[in-house]
Image 1 (cartoon, one colour):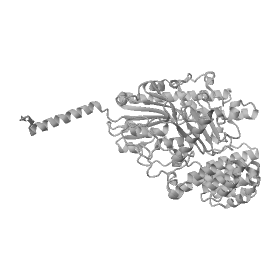
Image 2 (cartoon, helix red, strand yellow):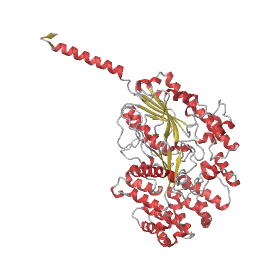
Image 3 (cartoon, one colour):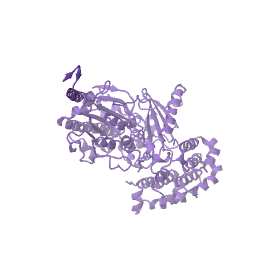
Image 4 (tube, rainbow, N blue to C red):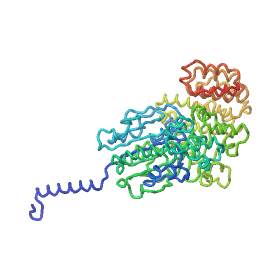
Length: 637
C-alpha cells in the first residue's frame, strides 16, 4: 500500500476509515450525551429543611439529595406569590417586564418571548409538566408534550429520548396548613412535630400562642409530607436506572404560606431552597460536587436559561435570566430583584433588591398599611390571632410593627445580623452609602427591564391590547420615555405639598399613566391639596378609567365625596374588570363617606351573576367595605 514513501489511494481510504472509527469511539467515551432533567417543584416553602440548618425539620430525603448535590443558600424568587413567580420562571423574563406581575392576571406574550421548554422540544427533548402551570398567560401549544396530572417522563415514545420533566407538589401550599381536611390527608401516616419545640423558630412578627404554634407545627408537618413525595420521585429514577443520567433540581416557588411571608418581599417570602444534583458524567470542573454549599446569588428567573445551557442550547437574547451552571455560565450575580403588585383584591406596589447581605425595599404606596385586608389570608388562623391581639392591645412590638398604618418609602436591612428584617436602617447615617448603592441598583433595574408596575392595571390591560402585549408597550415608538415620565410623577406623588405645582401640571399630561399619579399625589395631600380641587373635578370626566378613579379618591380625601361617589358607582356598573377593583378599593378607603352609595354597593353583592363572575375581587372588597360601614360580619368567597 506504500509506494515511494506515500500511501496508496486504498491505504488512504483505510487510514481515513480507521481515523473516523477512532474519533467516534473517543466521542462515545468522552461525550456523556445529553442529560435528562427533572424538576421537583414545591409550593409555599422557605428553607426550613435539615440540610439548610433547621434543627426541627424532618426532611431526610431532601437532605440526602443535598448531600449528593449542591445546596444554594442564596436562592430567591422574583415574587412572594406563585403565579407571578412562575411566569418569570417559565419565560426567563421578569413578570414586571411582561405585564404578568399582578396576581391572577391575564397577560399576552409577544412573539419573541417563548417559554423555555419550547426550545428544549425543538432540540429533541420530551417535555412534560405534572401539572400546575399558573403562568398568567395562555400556554402556547408548543411548550409541552404533555401538561396534565398524567404527564410523566415514562410516557415518552422513545426510551432513548432525553426528557425534561416537571413535577409539582401542592401539599405544602398554605391551604395544607389552613384546611383541616387537606392537612390530615397530606400528613397521613406521619408523626406530627412537637408544637412546643417548633415554637423555638417562631418569627418575632407572630404572637406566640397555641393557635399560632399549631399553624407553625403544621407547616413543618406538610414539609415532611413533601419530603416523602420527593423520595417517591427520586425512587422512580433509580428504579428505571436513570439516576446517573438525570439532573435533579429541587426548588420552591416562594416562601412559607403564612402572613408576612407569602405575598411579601422579605426573605420569608422570597428566599427559597434550591438543590441541584448533577450526575458525575455531566459535571464540569468546579460544578456539582456532592455536598457542596454555594452562597452564589441565584434568582429562579435563571432556571430556564440554565436548563437551555445544560442541554447545549443557545439562550435567546431576550431572556433576562442568566445561566448559573454549564459551559457558558456567566459571572455570579451582584443582586437579585423582586416585585410585589396586586395580591388578589389589594394593590400595593413594592420592589426589592438584595445582595448577599443587604435588602433594599422601595414602597411606592407607603400611605397604605403594611397588611391590607385580604380575604384569603384573613381566614387563616395565624392572621386571625394577629388581629385578635391587635384588638385586645396585647400585640408584641414585632406584631405591632407589622400592623402599622403606614410604611416608610424606603427600607434597608442587614440580613446577616437581622434575618427577620425588623430593624430598618434606611435612616441610619452609618449605612447611607449602602442605601445609595442599593437604591441605584433598584432604579437601574426598573429602567433596564422596563418595569410596568407603575401603570395602573386597568390602563395596563388597555395598553396591552393596543400594543399586542405588555412587553410591546414600551417598545412602541410613541411610548419612548414613558417609564421615566411615570416614575417621575410617582415620585412627586410622595413629595408632599411642595410638589403640588408639578403635580398640577402633570394632570394635563398626554399619558394616562402620568395623569393617574398626578391625581394620586394630589389625593395623598388630602385637604392640603384643596387649591387643585377644580382641576381634579375636571378629571372626573377623563377618558381613562384609572384617572377618573384617582380623581374621585382625591376629592374624597379632600372631604368632598358628593361628586366623587357617582363616578365610582358608574365604574362599578360599567367599567372594565380591574377598574372595578380599583373603584371598590377607593370606596373601602372612604369609610363613612361612602355611606350614600351603600345600596349601590349592595347591588354588586346581589343576584348579578355576570358581575360576580367577572369581578370576584370587586365583590370581596365591597363586602369588606360594607361590613365596616354597617358593622356586619358577612363572609364572601
